[in-house]
Each structure stands twice: as structure tokens, then as C-alpha cells.
Image: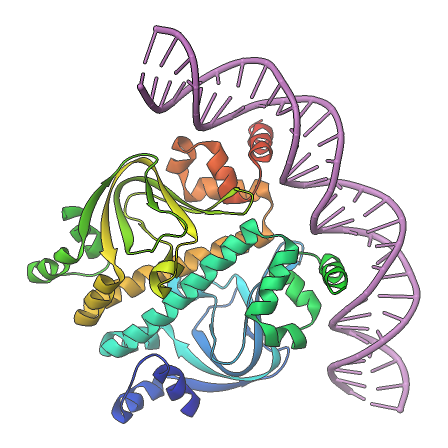
Length: 190
Length: 190
DNA sequence: TCAAAAGTGTGATCCGGATCACACTTTTTC
DNA sequence: GAAAAAGTGTGATCCGGATCACACTTTTGA
């Protein structure tokens, strides 16, 4: 729970009492590689704050092809937010890629925290603001950049993931085939 | 200003006094077709709530090609949020496509409103939440759907724009060439 | 520890959509 | 209301990246 406090205090200052109020809304969970946090069709009860480990969130089309919406590591939040916020069934899948620990928060918890604590509402707004900007950049990148450029941008954005994630998932994130990605960097390396 | 109040009250209930507090943070502005609200390189002072009219926001690549990030009509908010929030120069352009009226809000205004009024912070958080979900859907669509499908999805999402916006801008939004888009619906219409 | 599964590089082929080119129509604008 | 500008449809050609196929390497897990 110490990590949670640090995570929150990166945005807002909170007292011991305030933190004691916040704490009980989160539940701790251990997750093993290959384990699903959410599978399409599920009811999405929680969003997750990742304490350690790595996850990928992806959409599965009718042909069974994966499209990665995002990766998430330490200090990232993740959920199928459409399902979570709008109370729909999940259309996205979230899978653990490296043994992990997460904190779980229900929508009710999130809204209660926000309603009871102006500071926490500010915290969530600040997080969303960052997320919104990041998604907007990704859209621009998908529309306007070549696979080559997107690969380089990815390297800048996630230098650590670049190493430890199988290349085929990076390809799925970039929206190119595994083979094309392989050729990209075997050429640009020269 | 009546529209502003309605817009806010779609999310939260506010009293007359509260609205009197909110009002002065917004300034009214009339915008004519072809007029830029923001041009790349500008300092982004305001975000805009659109009262009437239509805008497009686009990214311009080195070859001068346009890529449309979003359209916005009545009751939409828009800004180059990366520039607005992070105090950077604009990389996006916002142009009026149909004579319009907007309300302008500075970042300082937004943050003051949020800090002074828990309700308004809640309002902004709710708006961001919706925006975040919409962007996430768009990314999935760009990654996984064919131009054909994206065109149909666009029709469902913006039935009104479908009619009044030149097709070439729809193409730029979908990430296909004008010609390809033209062939898409001349085929599917049969 | 060793078989199965997952990940990776690379050639050959194919195809969807970009690009170029041009004629025609509609809307602006002075 | 006429000239200019913007928007549109359609053919011909081209090319980037998908797909298929296969060999090789690394990781995983009973």
C-alpha cells in the first residue's frame, strides 16, 4: 500500500487520515503470467493500478487476430473503460505478460472517493487528462506516420518494453504484421 | 450563456449563484468559416466549447498532408490538449467549417473552477471520461477495421456530419485517400 | 531435461489502397 | 452572374505491406 500512497502523492499531497480513508477502497491481487484480468464478454467490475509486472490489453477480431490497445507496467492504470464506466460487457482482453501485483478499484469505489474527496476527484481528473493527451497523440501517429516512424516513436516512448516484450506484440501495437516489423529494424539497424 | 448552463446541467445540477460564479470564466467569440482558432506553432491559450457551427482539428505532416483528428459541432469541446495542458506550442490546427459561436476558457480558468468548485471538477472529470472512452474506441477502429467498416462506423457516429461535410475530410478522418473512399460507397450503395 | 510451444528472420507472391491524371459538377466570391 | 476555387467520380498504374511458407532459435513447463 506504500506504493499506492506514493503514486497518489505524485499528483496531490494527502495526510495520513486522508490516506486511511482512501486505502480500504483498494483490494490487492496477485496475478501470474498468462492470467486474464478481463476477457471479452466479462462484466468489468474493476479497474487496476499496476504495482509490478506487465500487461497487454487487446481487441480480438472475428478472425481471431489480436490488436493491442496498450501495454501497461508499474504505475499504470488499466481497464476496458468503455465497459467499466458504461456498465457494458467487455470487448477487450487484459492479460498478464509478467507476474504482477495490482490494486483493484470498483467504479463505485472510484465515484465514492471522488464524491467524498475533492482531492481524489482532482487526482482522477489529472490522470485522465494525461491519458487523454496520450491517446490523442497515438491517433495522430496511427493516421500520419509510417510503420517505420511508429516503430521509432514506440522505442522512445517505451524503451524498457522494447527489450522485454516479444516483437510480435509490438507489431500488433503498431498495426503492422510481424514480418514487416522484422524487416523494418533489420534495415534501419545498418 | 443559457446554452452553457444547459450544457453543464446535463451533467451536474447547479444553483443560480453557482452559475454566476462560473460564467465570468468564459468569454464569447464569433468565428467565421475558414477562420483558424489555433494554428500549429501558436501558443494555446484557450479551449473552446462550441455553441454552434462546425470545426475540424487536423495535423499537418511535412508534405502538407492533412490528417483529421476530430470534428466538433454543438456542445463539443475542442483544443490541442497537449499544447493547452502541457504549455507547449500547438502541433494541431483548428479551423471553422461553418460559421460558429464558441465560448473560450483558459487553462487557468479551468483549474480555478475545478479547485474552487468540487462540482465543476466533477463536471470536467465526467467530460474527460467520455472523451477518453471515445478515443480508445477510435484507436481500436483504426487498428482493426477496414476502411469499409470505418466508413460505416463513421456514418453511425456522425449521421449529421455525413451529409454536410465534404467527403474529402471524411477520408482524412478515416485515414484513406479521397479516391478510395469514393469507391467504397459507390460499391456498397448497390 | 527434453519435448512442445513460442518467438524470429527471410524469401516469394499477392493485393488493397495510394497516387497520378483528367473530366465534370457544385459552390464561393467579388 | 461569371470566373475561380473547391469538391467529386473514375480509370490506369504502382507499391508498401499482408500473407504464405519454412527454417531456425529460444523459452517454457511437466
